[in-house]
Amino acid sequence: MVLKVENMVKSFNKLVAVNGVSLQVKEGDILGLLGPNGAGKSTFINAILGLTKVDEGTIEIFGNKISRAAKKKIGFVPQEIAICYELNAYDNVAFFGKLYGLRGAALKEAVKKSMEFTGLWDRRKENPKKYSGGMQRRLNIACAIVHEPELLIMDEPTVGVDPQSRNNILETIKKLNENGTTVIYTSHYMEEIEEICTKVAIIDLGKLIAEGTSDSIKNSILTERLTKFEVEDDNGKCENIIKDIEGVISCSVNENGNALLVKSKKNIDNLPIMIERLVKGGVKIISVNIEQPTLEAAFLSLTGKTLRD
Ligand SMILES: Nc1ncnc2c1ncn2[C@@H]1O[C@H](COP(=O)(O)OP(=O)(O)OP(=O)(O)O)[C@@H](O)[C@H]1O
Ligand SMILES: [Mg+2]
Image 1 (cartoon, rainbow, N blue to C red):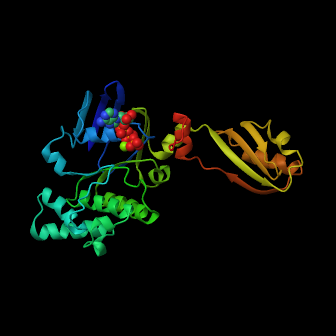
Image 2 (tube, rainbow, N blue to C red):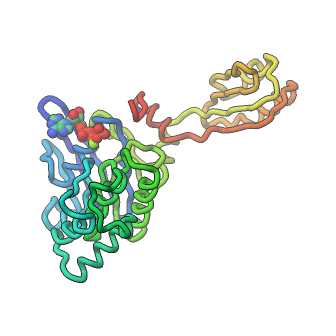
Image 3 (cartoon, helix red, strand yellow):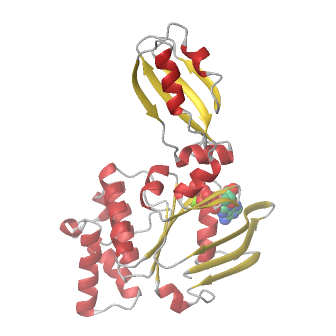
């Protein structure tokens, strides 16, 4: 196990920021920690790294308590960009490489590799002041991976970055993971969590409220399915035809009378009978679309709020 957290509790005065979280991350995982502002994500991550003392609970990293030796195997990208504007981009990465004990040819090789990985090699001589926000973020990542950590922890690495940088960051995470790096990262962005994480943990108000793969969370939480029929003309008929079919929870027609939205219980396959009855009733169906469940919908159902509240 790369990380094993049992019952972590951390309060700031009366505010309980992390409230009894237990979580395990195994080698090769990409764990996405998802939660709204103030959920406790950064506090959790800072505690893992030994930057914040916890009130209760145990944290094991690579099977032991956090130590200097363990820290050498970890790369950390903090939520706030932390680079030195007195140095050019190359020297920023080299600085971190030296901190981790790299010297000479090995250092040069490592700096080049991490700057190529993050797409910054061609612009290594520039001062990071001239970089865009997304490039600064990538530079921060280059600094965190220069020593080829076994575990990479990133706190909101894609917040406020341009789409090109975001793609680079996601590709970097994927490539590092393919090469054996375990990754933990927090995000507000469901789509990217769905795209790249092997495991998802949702926290809200300091508590872990769901854990698993994106699919398992959606399947266990979402009990409804939405089917949308595009029809030529409803003529006021559709609702009556559909509403008594087994599994249907509700059904509505849009103002133009050309779209029918049916909410059904997830585990009842009533689509064939809906189509059959509509056709028999003289409704001309143009298209049928079953809305795929999203992590966003599961999150909403779990927390009663959207991530960007
Ligand atoms: N050093 C601190 N002193 C007092 N309160 C703190 C401190 N750090 C965090 N908190 C509080 O703990 C709670 C959790 O904060 P935390 O930064 O862990 O949330 P987060 O999930 O990372 O949020 P965000 O998405 O905004 O980064 C918040 O209510 C925050 O105000
Ligand atoms: Mg945070």
